[in-house]
Image 1 (tube, one colour):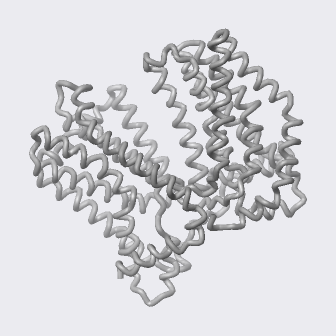
Image 2: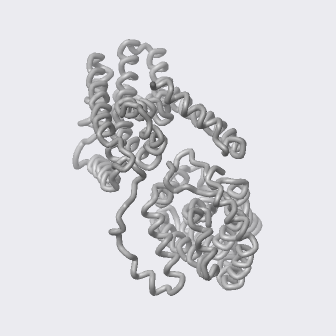
Image 3: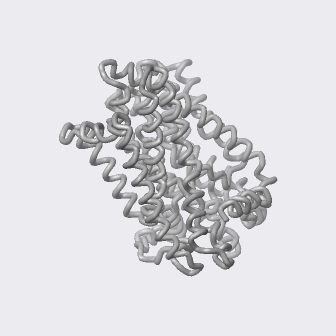
Length: 489
């Protein structure tokens, strides 16, 4: 029966009406996938030598074991956002004479051999091969890799349980923050506590039975849950939430624009793909540490301009480039009503503006590395507010691909077209080019002033620019509505 399910899934993939239409994107994704796998293999091979160089007096295997507890938690957090639980695919099977136990085994078995689990093998298997090459016992290394894969499978099935609750997100994130804080400030030696546990999986080969047993238990718990819930009208249906959240009454003070702000805020909070954009944006605040801490970038001011535009405008880019595709499921309905399109676009601009201001405020601590870093970030934020927001909204009028917010964020190319690739040039490339020209011709101060003035000019022309963009959306309205109706594009 499992073979039959796999055959049906294979046919569904190739017979999909969107297969031919998005073939180019699929080919592009294949190249990205190969690049990712090659990167993981490279990291796996180099990990031994990196640990040997960073900790010359320590065993690389021991040092890796000390950090594996964070890997487990981060992996679980990553899967919460990215891994889609295969629920919708089994609904047609529930009305057929097929045993529920077979369907449950199919769901869990399919997730066991999923892409997420295979990624770990491309990292740890090359690392294990390097260990064997350097004289580590092949039996210990082999069973250690089996143990790691069993942990990955266990994480996979635990995600099935915690993925249904937003509280789990806060708990996992809180545990990561608390453990790291306690360890970093020397309150509790977290790595010293968990290090021997994970190192024991290598040192004592028989301990491989522990993670295997945990994986089997996690699998069986999920199997019992799924088998008892496999009904068309039961909890395995599409996840819905009762409207118990705040009504966001404060948005009413914005008049007609407040209604659209409510829709956007609720959409962001209730859907994984949009919620992921918020968390990703917040995480990228730390992106500057990669460059500010490296002496090689100390005299590369254009690189700091890239950081300023990127960090203060990360949400602008990630969220803004898919406007109005986020609303594609009800965009046609909105356009058939007497809705002021100008207010709709203005609400989007206001939401993105708030994100730029917030991201700039979060980058203020980088003043520790010099006042010039703060000035560059400030000029970049002004440029994002005055120039990049109108640009991102204008390019949104060319979005005609539907986005299904219920689908997993990772590897999800819905809504992606040539527009998303072209938009990088004016949003990211142009300000860096302007900054670089003024920096080398005059000074860094002149470059910051140039970005700031362009942003201020954009502010001054805000109403005129929004009017032009509104007319552009009116001209493209019917094309966008037709594109958003195609569910398999």
